[in-house]
Image 1 (cartoon, rainbow over the protein chains, first blue to last red):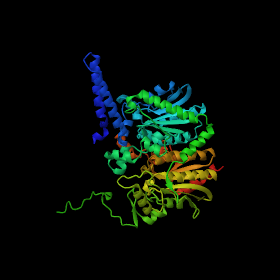
Image 2 (image 1 turned 120 degrees about the vertical axis):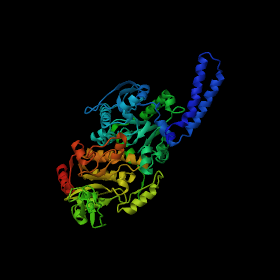
Image 3 (image 1 turned 135 degrees about the horizontal axis):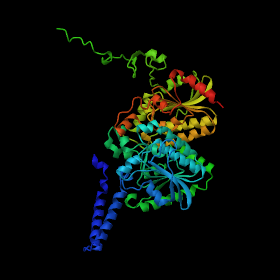
Image 4 (image 1 turned 135 degrees about the vertical axis):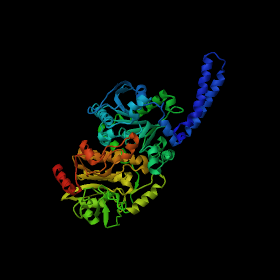
Length: 320
Length: 279
């Protein structure tokens, strides 16, 4: 079972990368290492990465989307935006570190940003609750959305969560209501909204920030009604069938583009965003700018109407 | 020697009582065996402990709407296996089975009728149809209902009972949350009353969208209402859940719903609310 959860498809790549690292180290200490050898290995590594990453299964993509080195919301904020001022708190209960947001500039244009935030190490992961927001997180997000509407700022949301927190506190403070209210509010927001799934798009907890006029996904991100593990446990009654569930749920970017649920796939650097966060950030920035250029001049009322039509048409059924 | 023959301390509830089929029902809450006719007369509420049994959509319509006034909308909408979804069973087969086991053709019935002489539109969930789960058809029927409510300036009431989104429709089931919530905004803009009645159980994507967006939110006594199901929470936090967790009374205490209304009083309560909110 454990093998499925490890990213062992990356192991051959990591082995080569380690050898390259070693050779570089030797050469820097003056040991006789031939440049060609390093270059040869580098070419081999590149080929290997490209081979492996071009044929990832949906379950492997899920694991890349959850990669512990993958850039998170705050990483993208610092690489894509300038002059970021983080704003805190829901004014009612507390500041939820699982959602971050604030004001910033995108190429000189003032915007509002909101995103779920995961932690990089154990301590941070606990603080950020693994990127699983509580109701106060969604209510902080709502405050920032209101700000975007009032000051006519484009709203950029970055989605990266396994889902909304499933615990006692979340329930007693009204998790459902907090998510529902955001859906309602976003559908009416009089400002352009661009949403990008940067890692995991987990269920209602992701959708609560995701009602964009343009919705994009990184190449190796996922967006789903339920986690593959959860789905496997319920429908297969067997959590180890997560890889099958991941395939069945159609939760990868290409699947969702085909189903016309998203507008664009944001390319990731060779071997995933975690191998070159700067390149990933550049791609994200270009994608956000492109999306904004399509919608930022549309009058607010028309934008809201178009958004309604966009979500109105989702669903497939027969009507004989 | 007959000392041990009779066990004087055996408690009554420890004995297995065989319940004959049809005539008698056992209350899931107080374990009392009750004459079925008596329960039915009591609107499927236990006469001993007031436990509210789960009821079908048709039964609820009969309880709430004036006799013969309810007419159904969009009854021909049919779910489609859009993802070609197969777990241990095919979604197509699950749908077929659900259709043959139920009078309703989907997990929600929508329509309009009169409640004590006042016109109202309603969506009523059928929990026995795939756990009342919300797929494209459920989302579409509710959205059409809300749009019609706006167009005809008619109050809308939703009676929920659902396990949440229908996984077999993947992302489309998730997006029904967005679609329905956006449609509720239409009613709010026009000051048309939107009332929700949460019945046992209401969880997941249904709770986290239109269920919690009512101008007035009513719940049936003891109904389980939550975002995450109790089992998921239990597995996540690995602690015992508090007594009464996620029950209607718990939500009431935490300020998440407006009132708990007995099934016997639901029709008169809705009628009073409709009068008080009428424009």
